[in-house]
Length: 116
Image (cartoon, rainbow, N blue to C red):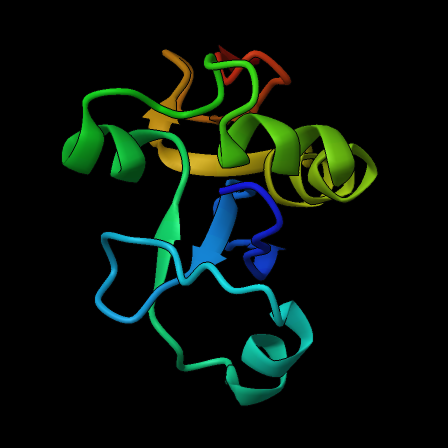
């Protein structure tokens, strides 16, 4: 898409998302600011990662030059902040009780593994 732009954001799950009309294709334009001005928090989007993989067979992150890969590189500080705020915090999960009946503090680590 030489010369074309797409509005991007970091979504709820810390994946890069592009603005979309139907949730499957990004809205590309040579006037990104105009598309951005028309977008709302309720606008549809396509998320990279698992959602992208379900539509296109790959996450987009592992393909150099793909908008997912580029978006994550351009917004790496925002992605890291999102991951730290959303997944890096310790919390007690009642469903994971220790043998003595106490809850075990868990978090999702940077590699998306559960840590205790």
